[in-house]
Image: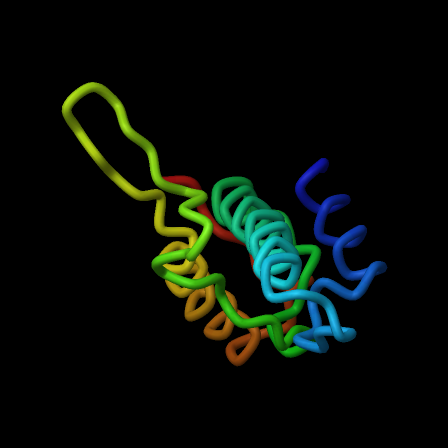
Length: 115
């Protein structure tokens, strides 16, 4: 429920559109991250519960965040391991699933079975 609210809030302030409004690149990248985190969470929860998604992939034009962000955010160091949470990769993985659902049937008519 909160993921759907996050998607609706991000849409209400325009994060789902690629228009930069003349903002600095760092702020645009932050907006992309916020939108895609909300999108990914909503898509994941919907796939697990069978509920309809709050978003329609045809309504947004925001590109995924940079794979190697210049600010280094998303990089985690745990002990000797150095890894990166690839938000851009996760967003790309969610996108085909949502596109496929939209092309097969309206969002309100789809119910996924728990396996």
